[in-house]
Image (cartoon, rainbow, N blue to C red; front, side):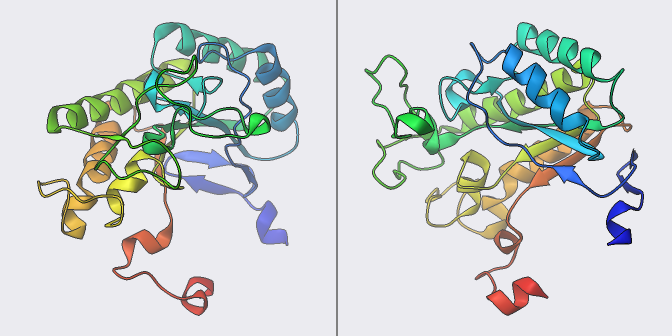
Length: 248
């Protein structure tokens, strides 16, 4: 247990202990901007004693939100709101702050969880056309649009721009969301990625977008900021692995 409370580093970011609060969606934003709820929520978490608090999934583009009440970091107003929130919290807490930048892909355009969380049609007030590596729907959701190569490159640029805004806002850590079936994760899976170009087929091709996005973000932000990726470890083992291997 004492190891849990010992210092650690992530990249060049020093942590006072090894307790990290992961991103947890609050579905309480207005046009992607933090609300008073977020100010109170993250102040409370920062005072908990955890060394690092990671702000919930923040979309790199409006169509990348899981729901219409998700946070975003695709524009200046959102960045300035994050900056103000962090400036208000830091005088009272020693916790470092990270942000998870994300694109929900084919799992976007959903209703709020307490309203069922179902995928909403494009003609719904809070629905829009979802996108994915291929036009493969998720469960009972509406079919996504297969991304063109130009659209893939644009999404990569949106991730990089979001990372730059995260640095401007004052975050210490940037986490690229590439798990849970969202866009970058769906490129990794041969079940959801049926592409025949350089972004599909072999594992090297399926992981190309994530690797390129990570490299560009790492180059675009200061070395003082830690950049990481949220993934499932089994995504990097051809054929996956079993429970015993996971535990090991």
